[in-house]
Length: 511
Ligand SMILES: Cc1ncc(COP(=O)(O)O)c(C=O)c1O
Image (cartoon, rainbow, N blue to C red; front, side, top):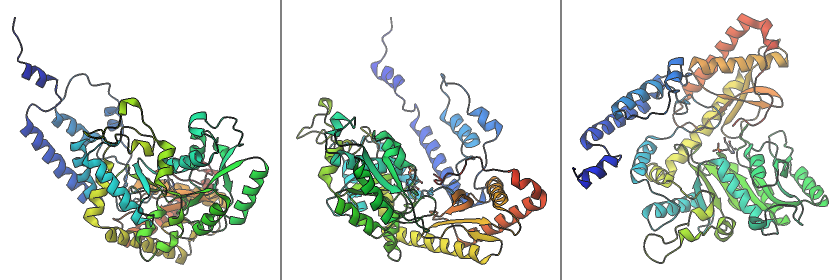
């Protein structure tokens, strides 16, 4: 009988490489390739659909046997890497997606090497997240003691904001007893019809039902109608509802409009309601000294949600929520199971510090990405890029306005431009068909990727500009391509346009 050397037996079960030098060489190769990939992004199509071969390669069964990392990387390069969303490209302006940064590439590598579990604990990763939350509060003019958390994105950040409102203001121990048939009546949340779809989903998840999100009409600039808000609040109270929270928009998803946040803060204060701001991208306008007044009043919110993976230009997933009152935030989510006991020494000092601010227990080190990007670029440079995005959006908007065959469908309040091609002689249905087909052809051409919106029922080509790589000639190419493609479509198929409909229907939200 042979006894195995325990060292080598253990090594056999480890996932570490047998040959670290070979692994290092592979890592260097990957990093070189990815730096080139980002540097040359402008030379490639913005987007292309994965071909049949790639689809087949990505449908194979569970791998039981090992493959070399070289082999797996070759498969990645052939079947995955060439077919991204495209949002790192200078001519991607669809939905609201950020580019990411080269610093983000490196910081994600570093965070992955450390692989910290950031529910809390006495460790540098928790100190980094605390520091980052303080920086974000300062960026948005929140008080220094404000609480906050990095999360996956705007949907979760908003959910945390309005759940804090529910738990603080429901009038019952809602965390324990649930919303049930409470004596307080149906709990309700208020925001404009232009609010992103997260609000109904959040009300659904909080047990209020999606009808618990009460939609208030907007004015011609997509801003909540204040008198209507007050009227609906009064009516709901008469019906026995218990209003909890007003949601203000800093940058609506369809048109980039911002509600009168100061007026909303006043109404919320007078009514004893929570004031939450969805600043998914708009909040970051605060970083531009020239345009920060566009989102004035945001700093008065009880909570604000925003995404650094949108206008903060960082990699996915980097959402953030700030809550003005740290005590209320913690009361809303505190969590102290016996298996995560707090000690006064050792590593488990405050093991649930961050888990008690949201819904995740296991959390990664996304704070490093924020910390490295903000430290490397500095806030002024990011603010200058945001300012340039706003001014380039105005440039695009003016170009559209000046062209006889183009039409703006909404005012350009910040960084979203909604327009359409409008050649003479077409009715509304034909214009919708022409513009939707133009958009799809444009995306398929690989030249540019805007997305769409419905503005008063009309199909708009929508450019949401959170792209730090775009230069003005990219917008010139966009306009030339839209005119060219729509001209070809018109020439080829004028009679068929009326039969076309856009398959997603007339929704407002686009992301
Ligand atoms: C205004 C607004 N709010 C919320 C969201 C949701 O954010 P996320 O996609 O990061 O969950 C978006 C996404 O585009 C948005 O534009």
